Length: 475
Image (cartoon, rainbow, N blue to C red; front, top):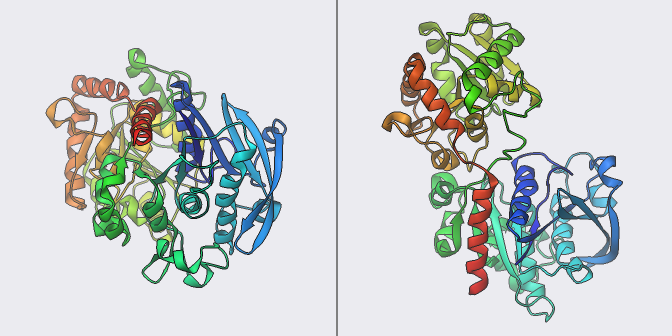
């Protein structure tokens, strides 16, 4: 079985968010399971020079972009044993930043068409093309419109993965033909709510649609989560699958992580956690106390991450409990301003670190006792899985991938603490339960061991994708 994984970003070549982690990890895990999986992505200006030096030029071709044609250079690179195809066009991709340009619609129309155009020039004909998010949503659309009837392309199956349904690739209908090159008699494929909706078109045309967790696959059938796309998804629910993402367990390994203060494993958990906590307290100028529970958050400071709930109860928690709290992130002024106020009021208990500092995030995962993640919505989430890996107990709201990866320890078997309703009182009660659990040292150590033994590796995800691919090819 051969799979071409198409994404607008992939580690280590370019990254702006979680998609790059997935695209940089899942194909590697599939390759380890003897699946031929390769990656296609744009050749951005930001691709590091040291990675460019090992690229091999394959070919150049002329790609149709509606009524015009554009140059595309195809370069091949190998990383971690996986083959990457990087598609070059300096007009579209020699820019600062991956997204946010005035002509993103045309840039990623070019990319999607170029992926399909390059295939006959490769020594690799995929059985399945797996496109991801709106930037490559045109791949299954173009395949159905222009390539499925061509003898060389016949038999290829398409899969479309939704990482975040909020970003659907919406544009005015006036560019449907001029930019996307979709004929008038086919515009109904992408037309939704009087505009072009690329994600809608991909859902219609792909043979399978996946999301990044089983719970999220159910949630996006509900108008509260779907950003208005639920009618389309409900009509095609038969092709919708939810597969939970994983994390890179080699990178996030407390036994080898060079960015934490002291390495540790399950057998050295107590000593390792204590040392990392002490050094983190020193770094943050918090009182150096082993006995006080330290709660951590690493998050974007935006409303859907549950910060409205945190804002409602944080002052009360800090005023009434012997606890320390650190948050790392950046985002909306409203939340950054609030956390600055809390830091001034509770100098010995609360620290806010603004921006994204990767090495500090790892130190928080390793040094905190409890990790708070009360998201309003969370397609998958990685932070809760990372915190488990470092023996830090998550408190999460039961939504999306949080529900699929964290189970409440109230039954004596779970790996964290959960709450259902998006309600500050429910979150506070879960924090109270976690603090009570921390006070029981023996029980807490059992819970920490159970957390570290949780399997959130990409291997589980890869096996689920392979089963889905195989069932698709049998049809």
